[in-house]
Image (cartoon, rainbow, N blue to C red):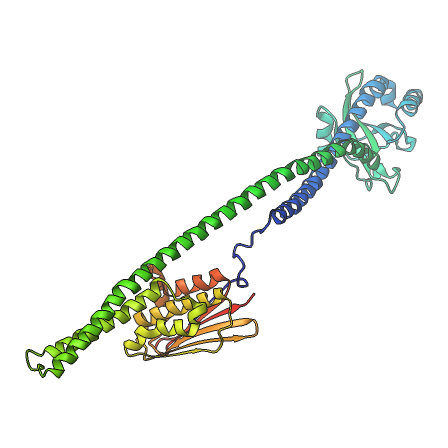
Length: 450
């Protein structure tokens, strides 16, 4: 099984957040500018649609005014019958008051599909099929608009190359007959009218977005400064807490070393000296006193060794003064006393203090797992440096483990692999664990030196 945990370069924070107010403000400015541009594009699109819809409504209103005010009074029975004089009268009124840009065509239809008037005289009197949809539009109240289908036979005289907006309006003649009035307008002219409408609002939109962005910048700067100040305060509190914890651990270790350990060392020497005196006085046979004294001395020395191991756990040695080799040997001493052969090979001592401490912690956790779970006969600890990369390898010949075992350990809340991963990942390194049941375990921690 192979488990890998990666981090960033050593010495960087994992979060990747901006380290300065300027960096945070730059990110906010970029994000705000992008958001402003997106809002601007969306706003322009909305204004364009609103302008086009407004221009279409204006075309409907113009058609209604023309139909009701100019065309409807001249829809006489004579016009309905096709009288030339009635057609000429309506034609004069239409050309004088209606036929100007964007209007390019006027038509008046009966319900049965006959054109009773058009400014294109060749259409007057022509009859074309009327669909049910067109008949329903005619019978409805109010104007409707759509792009004209210029491929229809009734539109064969319309100007080519232009899109035409066709506006329908039902009209009642003075005699009460229902007809359909159609106005054809150049769609590009209609759009131009709408464009003028939304362009009038565009400066206000852009100005509002720019002002909003400018107003947010000082607020963002103030917020970034507060966050940065809070981060620095939290880091200072954390450093003080860590320093206080280290100081307390150092005090406890010093008390144990200068008190209990020294007292036990003195007891050990006294017991050994007493055993020697008993032996020299020839009193060995009286109740086995010499043997008891020597057992007590040995037990005392073992207790001292265990206490010194505990001191290493409570407060690791100064790695800069004692050296990583010595610290790792002290760390592995309990395994050696338990019958496991431990080989420590540190080929370099020139590493940053943070890397020394990291490797010490990883080795400490790895050896703890070896002692608890591995049942190993030999453990090899290797530290080496190649260029800008430092590597720690802790390898044992124990019983190993599989993925299910790792899951059980993590689920039960033990440290093990999870702690090793967190240690290296938090420091920005890379941790690899190789293990197979019955084939031992190999823990490799690799750090790129900054």
